[in-house]
Image (cartoon, rainbow, N blue to C red; front, side, top):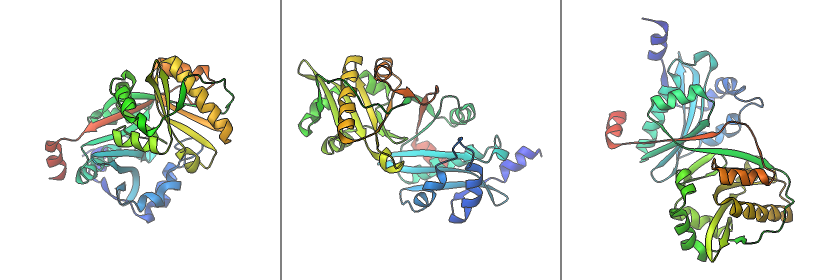
Length: 308
């Protein structure tokens, strides 16, 4: 039997333990130039009731991890897939992801989503092998200049605007191109009526009105400020023509300047009218790569196979 086959046979996936942290943090330390966020969220994730860190071990030594969490009824999110460089291409990521699917199914999820960079060829190979589909592409941009001209047709959305905004989204090509999703930090979930209501109630929705109709929308959140301990906001969803988006960004910039917010993270679907508006308004892309959003629908037959 070849060594690769032996290694695959010895891969055991289980729930993470606090005692795994030294080994896990070691193979995570060079994920990016600055390190990794896993050590910062490890203890929080261990205590989650609606999520789980899964660890792959070989000879009782942790060699890979992934985090799976239920975001809302029927939806699961996968993130932080890490494999020890010494054990890549040995089936570790595949084994962990399958166990993530099992956990999601046990919690009633019918849909799982995750993101990866467009140039992460190793991850793309595994995801397609596991039947995940690329459903949308996003970009992340940053701006620290909050000076802007006056907006003309933009205002904060009101709770009473809900029906009109929802009708706008239902007919929006951008909403479809975004796979009907929005993001807070780096977590994407379905943008449903309940989510829109929450943004409206918290006064985090900006609309552009043209000829007495909503024709532009930006949803924002300050979770980045709390999570990354900096004075910032992010766009969670952006929709509209270039003209509408330009006007809404001017409005957002003015709000940030008046509120003392120093940085705006622009997350948006990779849609030319929108990204060009961000470019015009002085936003810069963090990298040349896109953020790929993948999803997989978990069928009843698959549930029987996974849980049987």
